[in-house]
Image 1 (cartoon, rainbow, N blue to C red):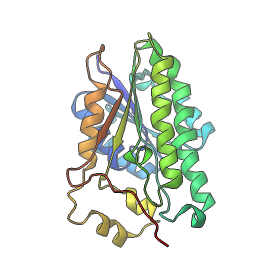
Image 2 (cartoon, helix red, strand yellow):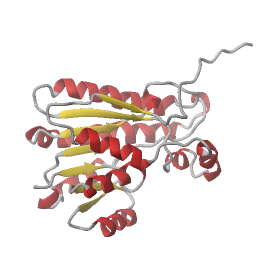
Image 3 (cartoon, one colour):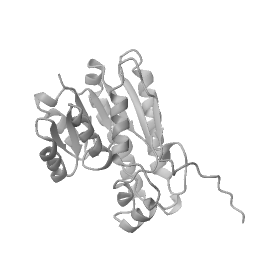
Length: 249
């Protein structure tokens, strides 16, 4: 019998690649996302027997609940939750940043993630399921302009470790995937659509791809039941750690 993965942010980037990876391996996927036309394109590509589109904004708790309540029988039993939906907004230092951007990041990366996780935890415990939370190296290593984005991802990583502690003995596995530089729509979203900024960031850098991260998500989700990867930090070879800043003035 096939298993089912619930993947948020499935209309682009890591989420889209993960949906394709799981379906290729014979899984069913509940694909969550805001953009209905992209979800429909995914259904058209992978088949309605394999993908159920759950169209809602993760920041809208009522819409999320309605989408979960409407899951058809063939997709209602979730074995793996991939909390992938998230975003960064803005690159300005904290003293110049947009408070609205900060709030959107907190609502999306933190509040929505815990809301969906809380809702699905009873089912995941019952099925001895897997939770894969997509965090970031930004939650571990600070950098200029990372401010609230880095803070939200640090929350995701710490929340995951605490989930693992609370779920001790339940059979539920919890993993945080913490990617470094990967070329998706991430920088376009962060810069409010600045294609030139995105092109400049990735040019010549050989960044990771959505498929690279999807492979890691699938790997940790399909490990033997007695194994748990707590954290998986992954970067392209071309990226490493920056030095400390020193102000001389």
